[in-house]
Length: 129
Ligand SMILES: *[C@@H]1O[C@H](CO)[C@@H](O)[C@H](O)[C@H]1NC(C)=O
Image (cartoon, rainbow, N blue to C red; front, side):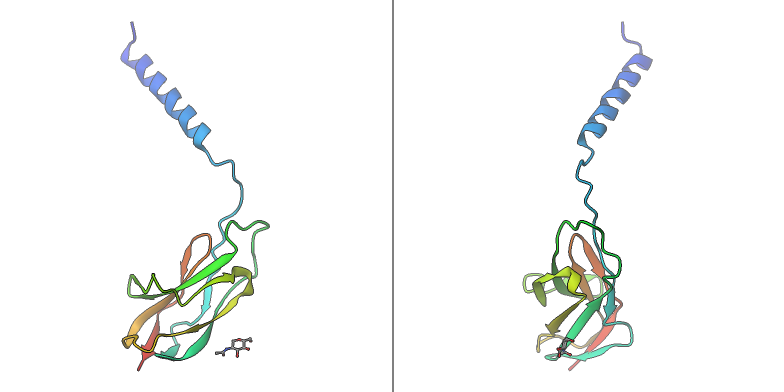
């Protein structure tokens, strides 16, 4: 007869085995370089072109996704996720030219999100007309 202790122990062992067997065997690092520019002092005009820059000083030996995507965010929301400011560039470049769409509403809560393996927000900056 199974006591509740045995049942609990059995459950714990099964859970442990399930966790161990599903642990990733892929040891590649997630690479999320921090955005350096634009920063909180930046003011960009809608329609203008600028270089977004990020810190590539300490990349891991292996990067899962070397291709980057840059999306504009306003407040906590991504704007124009379906039309990124840039995509398909090498994340190790540390720099990518982007053009702010002319119809971008003015605001002081914009930020740049750089996607590689994962996403990383820059500081909030301002867009004017
Ligand atoms: C972006 O950087 C590149 C390389 O330094 C430069 O040639 C280009 O003019 C820059 N673009 C802008 C908009 O400043």
